[in-house]
Image (cartoon, rainbow, N blue to C red; front, side, top):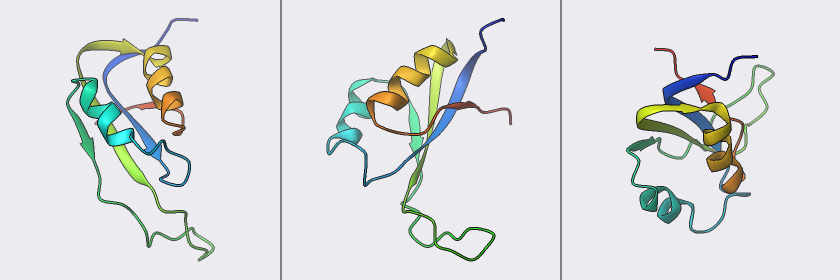
Length: 86
């Protein structure tokens, strides 16, 4: 199986399980990234409230593999990364 490579990746980070210094860790990576405002009021299709979360988009200067980005998301107890297609 060919390893997927991309320059732009995203994952969801939940404050309840993220390390206290997750913002510092992102800054220390020196990789441009976008961090959404905290989503506190999102709801599921059934009307139940979603857990508060942030959307993180990593903007690498060169293609990175899924495994490389997975190590970043795991270190922050975040969801598995997904390639940004658009």
